[in-house]
Length: 168
Image (tube, rainbow, N blue to C red; front, side, top):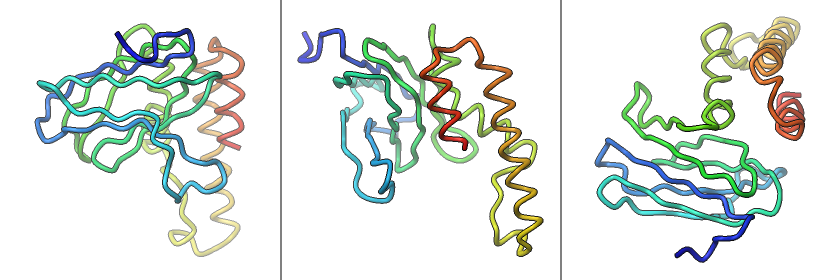
């Protein structure tokens, strides 16, 4: 049995088809100091390509899954059991969440895919003109909000509030 079997337990169970992926971490970055060392909530080594990770969380929160130095953010709630699959992708390993809550847990990557297929993330160095950059940021913001509001309006209010604040 697990050390975290209570109602506040968040479980991650997944598989990797890429044998070079031997470790997965679940971390929490500080809101103010994202570049500093994250708090490691759980880390797991692959056993025949299978990962099992678990941690305690008393409230809904955003955590980051770290694979080969790349992070994917997702919104988790106490009691969640999150299933994932790691496969080689065009930019390295890609994680996809599967199961009953896959829409919610894939929000971050799906939102990025949608925005990047339309406008990408604006970078001032690409524009060098403040008004053009501002227009690009406004377009990015509208696309992010539109994607969230049109595809996730039935999610829990705390999920929507978190991502609306994160976009803003």
